[in-house]
Image (cartoon, rainbow, N blue to C red; front, side, top):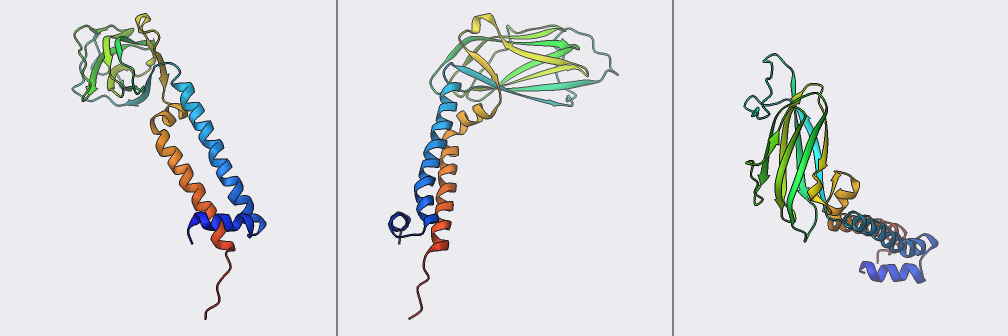
Length: 211
């Protein structure tokens, strides 16, 4: 017997646990679906760029483009920012990203695009206190990588230039994860609840005697 038929039997003929499971599990799925969709809608109320920061040891050939003399014995670290246009239908034009050194010194900066996105470094500026990336154009889903070489004690802040309104910049979070994976999350929740319902029904199904 298929799951739907078994569910109806549980509703009308089954024990209390089966009946409650058949009623409440679909309600739980509906409630979770509403919560997830509401969280996604709140993130997308305004066009948003998301970023994720990673820190690592700099590679030897990283460019020193900020006209700052770096002592050969100085300790340095590399900051990597993964930038993404999270929207599905909004084109961002003339976006400026500014990375300020709240502490320490910036030695170098570099921006690259993950195909099919494109980016130019011609108009970017950099000094020991900040790196500015001008005129970024980002199609929906476009991704970019920004690398910053800084001193060991460097602490950075990322923000948008004044001309980038009404775009919002957000760090990677649970909400942005749900935006990127909403379909898969809802599918996984649904399958998980179906498995629970199936197990409860099968555990309490009567065993047919052997003829």
